[in-house]
Image (cartoon, rainbow, N blue to C red; front, side):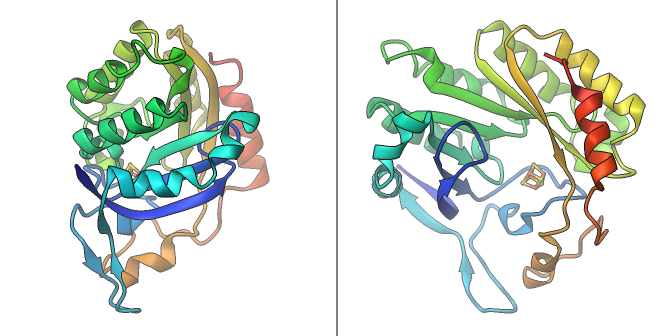
Amino acid sequence: MDGLVFDIKRGVTKDGPGLRTSVFLKGCPLRCAWCHNPESQSPDIERSVTTGELCGRRMTVDEVMEEVRRDAVFYKPSGGGLTITGGEPLAQPEFTAALARAALDEGIAVAIDTSGFAPWSAFEALLDILPGRPGSSALLFLYDLKCMDSERHLALTGVDNAPILDNLRRLDAAGARLWIRCPLVPGLNDSDADLAALRGFIAGLRRVERTDPLPYHPLGLEKYAAFGKTPRFARREGATAEDIARYSAGLANAQ
Ligand code: SF4
């Protein structure tokens, strides 16, 4: 079993609790206007036109686990573990499930960082791993909610939000651990009405442990040219401190 990986980062303190190793899988069905990982979108190995370096390599589950094990001693004391991210990890559902299973078998907690745009069967395959393993708390979903308005969601990301919302409701009903993350981009999806709609939807779920805004930053803009792409949203300034305070207040107590 192998998958297409474009990066592995150790010592990550975001993307879930504690100290983590984040494995970035290549390929994503969305095209978010603000994406700061444009190299993650194509499901193929690409060559940077500026550095000539290849982006993406096929790795087996065992090869990835060798990297993940290097920080195993830190995971339990810190409450951390493996985060499978991307791109969209559920665009490679068999590999993601096999990697999650391998980590859980070794007692390493797993977080899946997902856009939610995947067939329900991909989520089900992950939930099916848990029985017989220590604690359902060992599997956490970091689930992005980008915009409740379906037409604007389609315009901003290239996909309908209906399956994303449906999968989230089903995960919630299945008792999955959920952290909701809301990428918020000045002028695109961050109005007070947008925040209220997000808060209202999240308030209808039972299993959400926390909700975090992900304020826009421009750090990925330089990468577009390297992969022959043009950013659709090229603002050079990140979200302001005022924006960030408003996002936090707007999403507070959603869960
Ligand atoms: S879901 Fe994430 S990786 Fe995919 S296009 Fe959007 S921001 Fe980029």
